Length: 152
Length: 91
Image (cartoon, rainbow over all chains, first blue to last red; front, top):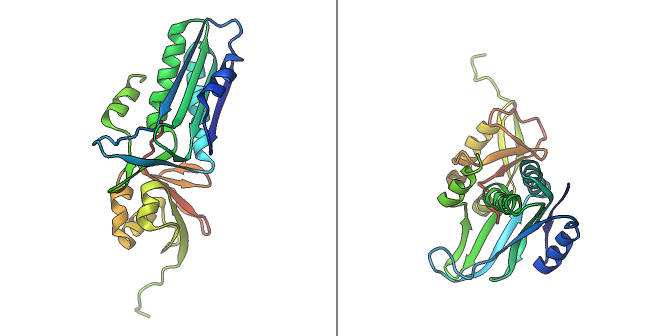
C-alpha cells in the first residue's frame, strides 16, 4: 500500500501524475484517474476570470493525507494518489488530480469517487471565483453534501 | 468599596481564512476576559465586527488553536492566537 497526498502551489500536470501513478501499477488490474478543471463559467453563467484557492499552512495538507488514508483503508486498492492545487488558477487549468490502483476496476472506481466526494466537502481549502461583478466565495453545494452521504 | 469588580482581560490575536479574512480584513486583536472560551471570543468578534456574523454564526465555522480544531468550549490561554476556519470547499 502506498499513498501520495500533497498540495501544489504552482502547476499541476495530470500527465506527469498519471505516469507516477503507473509506477505503482505492477501486478494491478486497474488504474483510475480523475482530473478536475477550473470552469470558465460560474454556476449562474457568469464568466470567471480566475479561481483562487486559499489554504491553511498545516491543516490543508493534513486533510488531504487523512482523506487519502481513509480511501486506502476502505477500498481494496494498492495505491492512492491525491494532488490539489492552491493559489491562482486560470479557467481550464487542473485544480485536482486523484488516482487509484487496484487488482480490480470496481475498487479503483469507487476509491476515486470517494476521494473526490470527500475532497469537495472536507479538504481544508477556501475557493473564490473572481468575476467581473466582483469576487464570490464558493461553498459545497447541497449535491456535494448528498454525494458525501453516499459513503456513510 | 462598592465599585464594579475589575475583570482581567487579554488581547487575543484572531486570524480568519477565506470569506472571513475578506470580511475582517486580515488578522485582528480582540480583547476578552481572561478565561474566555473560543465561543465567547466568537461572540466578541461578531460584536466588534458585525459583518463577520454571516461566517462566524455558521456552526460549520470551526475554531482552531495550535493547528488543532477545537470546540467552542475550549478556554483560550493567555497569548494563544485563535484561527477561525469558515466552511471548506476543495475539488
